[in-house]
Amino acid sequence: MAEHQQDAVGRGRLTAMKRIELLESDRENQSRIITALVDGSKTFTPEQIAQLRAVMVDVLGDAGLRLDEAEHEDEAREDFRFIRRLRKRVDSASAKVGMAVILAIASGVIWLIVQGANMWKGQ
Image (cartoon, rainbow, N blue to C red; front, side, top):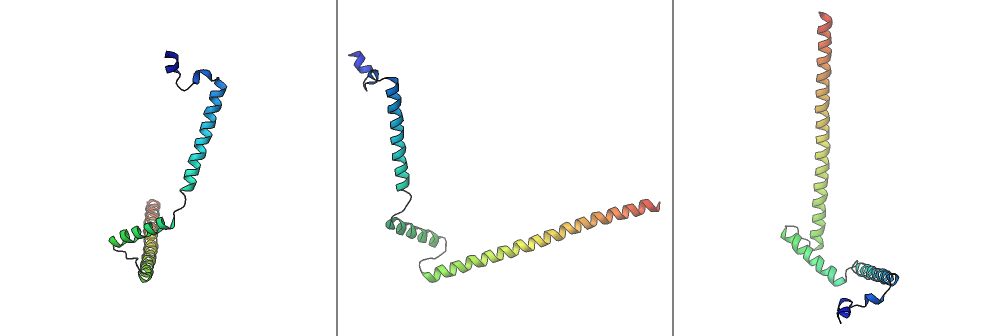
């Protein structure tokens, strides 16, 4: 009886090769099941998409961005385009100002070197 309790699943009667075969087939079956679950969850049903749209419209509406009508969507697109154009102009202007500052500093260093060389020659 004690031997039966220690070997409840019948492992004592299996050879090492049979145990390995069972482990490999279990792993393959589990992999197939997991793959099927992942593949099955890659697409949303039309009901789920409708729910997601409703949630997004509510959340964006709470943030002040109304998208419940086509007119509101067009206005939001134009707002984002305006913000993008503004950002690009600001980036361009800051790049030009940065380049002007770098050129001014480089010119000042060159001027100091030339003035130092002229003073050194003059002595």
